[in-house]
Image (cartoon, rainbow, N blue to C red; front, side):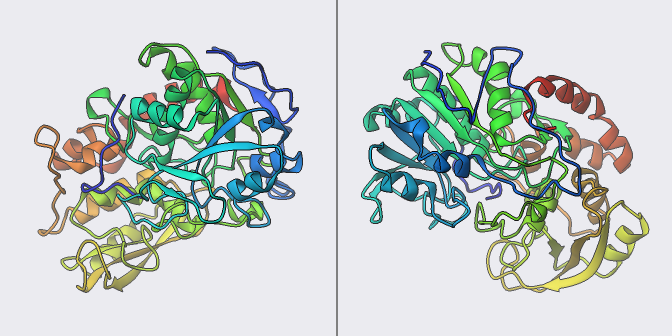
Amino acid sequence: MAAMPSRRSLMAGGTAAALASPLLGRSAAAAPTAPPASPADARTAGRGVTPGADAAAAEGWRLLRGRKAGVVSNPTGVLRDARHVVDSMAAQKGLEIVGVFGPEHGFRGSAQAGESEPEFQDPRTGLTVYDAYGADAAKMASLFRKAGVDTVVFDIQDVGVRFYTYIWTMYHAMVAARDVKASFIVLDRPNPIGRRADGPLLTPEFASGVGLKPIIQQHGMTVGELARYFNGELLPGEGAGGRVDLEVVRVRGWSPDATAQQTGLPWVPPSPNMPTPDTATVYAGTGYFEGTNLSEGRGTTQPFQFVGAPFLDHHYSDRLNALRLPGVRFREGYFVPTFSKHQGKTCAGVQLLVTDPRRYEAVPTAVAMLREAMRYEGFAWRKDADTERPYWIDKLSGSPRLREMLDAGAAPREITDAWRDEVRAFERTRRQYLLYR
């Protein structure tokens, strides 16, 4: 899933009894009382990691008994044994699953970027799957009422970046659940790119489907932690106001220091162009290239790790390597995209090789890559059909600042320094919502 000008925009748009399961961390209004998980050092961070879904399934989905549950999920909602959580729930006697809600790419994942699966009866479970892609909170609420839910369950693997749209599906679903007086449960999963926070803050004037609310670009939170942040900081000012009754089923045995590979968990691509954890590692930065006329590697086996265009040459890799950016090397690379930008044309460019994930800085690296790409006469910013905000890079970065500073010739360090205070402020605010240390 990555932002493309052709995708449909996501539009901006009670209290239930606390569940008794010991798996859950209840959301508080401003200062959550749930204690952080036990710390783990880098050597043990990946051992025995149990996602929230597996923890709940091990209890026979006890937290859903007596409820009419609707599940927002996609192919990443799997247990360690590779069964989908919905299949596991549907097979459990005594549970009432009243509907499934598919985001971009669909519940079973049959749709490409900017597409979804229309409403259908799932042949495996017999459940109705509703098309929730592009639904704002009001539309989502109508789907919840149609299905008759009193509890919404969210289980989707995120990649930790503001412009990866599943978190905004979750946001709309939280607002809708609040408005229909349903409770909201997040089955938490690790953030594959860890705790690092970086990148510019979105400004409200540039809200879109790839960034609905003012959070920074690389938020460094799990979806469970982000749901707590949404509930404490954003939902009170949304629509009629107030918070949703939120529960988070925590990941056990995980530290944000662990890489996705160290967790030992199966990687199910969250979207067709996020095939591996390595893709997620670089995506927080190279997603910017969707806002240019360079190929971001769509139509290759390594999207977002390959970046190039027919008008680049071997000097691009030479210049980038000369910068000695931390934790990354750039291999001179050539590729022919099978679809998307420059389809069927030979592109010169680079393959990003992350040599040290702990030192690698995705956003500053991408800013430096943009700066060097702009040396080429063929470089251009990509526009969409939005006449008031035509530059797609502005939606991805959250404001015109990045583009305008690059166009003015600002150095990469000057640009990244411009949002340091925003990152620090976000880190201070998010601290109370974190579950894992």
